[in-house]
Length: 469
Ligand code: GLC
Image 1 (cartoon, rainbow, N blue to C red):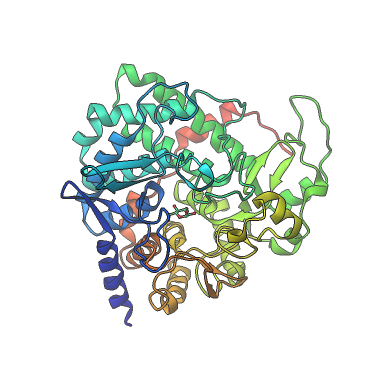
Image 2: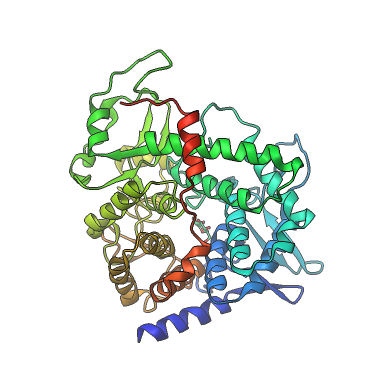
């Protein structure tokens, strides 16, 4: 099929996945695949819809995005509860569906029905990101300034800024609380959540109404953004120079000026990293907590940090360099791996709980997800590297449509259609639409990106202690 026909085909398929409620389009199904058990793939996921929403906004279909935002506002939990089985005030569901039992109604799932009962930490952050993209595209400030919308933003800020059992700027979260919604050793301070959290705070800063009552929110958003920039740029960053420092770290330092702040044991450095990391590239590690540096490369988090400027220019270029240096593994036959390398052996047993869906090089454990083409495209366009993006899209176009837009691919080089992958996976379709559209009309990118802010950077210097390894 011609390239332009592929884009038209994908747009039609995205339309086909639309769900209506009370006669209005309100979202998209996760997958429109009748050949396998639906499980929850017949629902509207907030994280999946974010990708559809960006594609709809690019194509001028603003109505569905506004309807979605209105509907989900009503699904945000508004009760102050001390009941462990109820969603916390401010939480948004991972997914919801339109049910016709006893009349048409919306049925949300905050984790109480989800496989393994995983609750979403990311939904609220994706929601703010969608809202920001929507208003950036439409200028519909009346909607944003409405009481309900303002309340939703403040509840999300309270939920993520107030109550916690922690002393880091990064967010402490359980395993499987985002795109990787199964046990994968991604508990603690996973990069993707930190990148989303940062995006959400930047969004809230733009969306909250400027008034005296909101001063306290603005102050705390700014403070946290500064702490996050400092912490993540400094401690999550890994290049060869840094690796060498970690390799020679002293341990058991008890004082405020410790260089090895998190007591990382050099013995925990995995051997694969020495050959994998090039002299001219680098990336943000997957997770960082007490005596724990997860050296795996997680694609979504790293690319989001380019998109929202949490990574500085040098770091952004180094990440893109790493992706092109490691094209065989990360892009292979279909873009792009969710993480590298796969967990295997005893590590797989312990960290996934023997999960047969997440065997090495499959699904969340080193599988390849076409949806991530939107992150790839946004990051490469932002850094003005169109040629490489062109090559990646060409690789995807060889198979995506022929394979019926699978949810994911398996194997070391992303050659196999995923073992249990759904077909007609909506975010694979939307991911492709975004990538292809950005290649043709790169100016459309501005609704998704954030510029580096000198104000935030100045706070990063003031708040953090200047420590050099
Ligand atoms: C799977 C994915 C999750 C996605 C959902 C719907 O559970 O792990 O990230 O949101 O499917 O597509």
